[in-house]
Image (cartoon, rainbow, N blue to C red; front, side):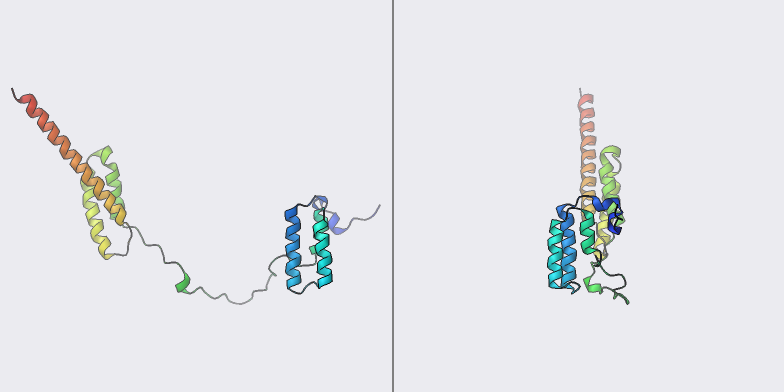
Length: 171
């Protein structure tokens, strides 16, 4: 009985290799050749063996003496900070009055009384947004529209009720 080679001792060494596994090994060989770690005859020999390899063990033998990624400690020294010109601008904060106006506007059908705060907060938000560097113009506009619609609907209901009372009380 022969002694097992180090690459044969693990259970993975006899596992069948896929086409993707062979391509990964070929990529390592190509990089090693481009970096000057392999000469042309050795590169060609290993490439042929890589494409005919059937197991992980065979592929591991071909690339075991080659680095398979960035060499540790290769990039030594301080890392230069990225200039601010290339960084995206920081996100602008959202105006809290605009958000509150939208929330009050959405709540109008459920509460009925939040229409007036929606309109007031929407106008406050619009006023602040003219001078600040905040976002939320669309939120404030939506809150204003929903608030004014709620007020108009409330006034229409009151007028309808008054009209009905007047119609019932007239003989």
